[in-house]
Length: 365
Image (cartoon, rainbow, N blue to C red; front, side, top):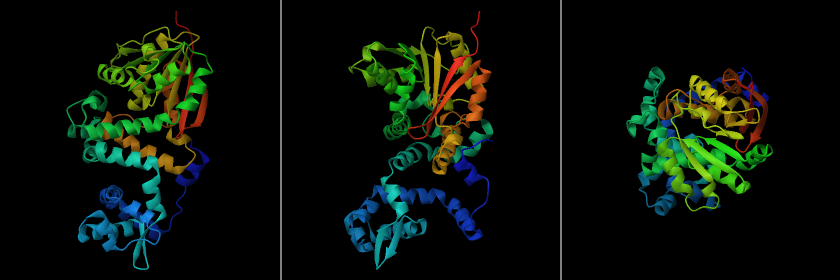
């Protein structure tokens, strides 16, 4: 299994002392509590107070500022000391480096919100999901086969956190992705799994002659139309309703470019091959297929790989039960099995995205 040098260095040899190893094992046993304590230290504003207070704060001062009981503040602060998000010196609490990142890193905030509002309760059913190959945790919200069917009906806080998570990961790669895609000079684009239409809007505003079609579930197209209504260029964005899991559901033809952003990670390998084979049937020798994904093995730091491999378990328990954030070897194998060849791979876009530029191997008679 190939990995970047940074990941290989981290994952190939044991480098921690036995005492640290024991500590980490105990941290894992209390991980759900650690998560909630840290979330509340942000929500109650305690970490921000410690950032703002140059010399730190006493427990009494924090209780007064938060309007929480001394007991509530005490258990949160004592746990946070052990977690490592705060320090205690000269009878006052101050923020640590870990606490600062917890408070200040926007990606941490997005992941915290997703895990609290979307995955936390459902993760109790991870074991069932792994055994059954179904998103057993999704039942905490409703009786859908996948989270995508129920996205428009999720509770407001869960839907908001899901969309923020989805947009944060994709949006900051869009500028670089547009340069890559438009270097092929497409005039018609098919955005597969286009969600709320953010990419399609960027495309039609990038070139006034471009038309975009979003291929997605009917429920998703309804959300998309509401999101883009009245915006410049929206008249050049169309919808094509389809259930991508239906092997009899064909791709529309006649597009210069087919775009799949953070889409194939929503499916199993068998489903990916099925989807791509149908895309191949709609392509001609001038068509390009662009796949943008966060591939965990192509990350340049271990923290990113850690995050992505854990996001895989969100797919297991909540999204569909059988997909993940893929290793590039696995995704490329699916691409080739579908009758495509990877012409080029662009790495390091946005928050660790890669774009696979694919071409059809042959023209069918």
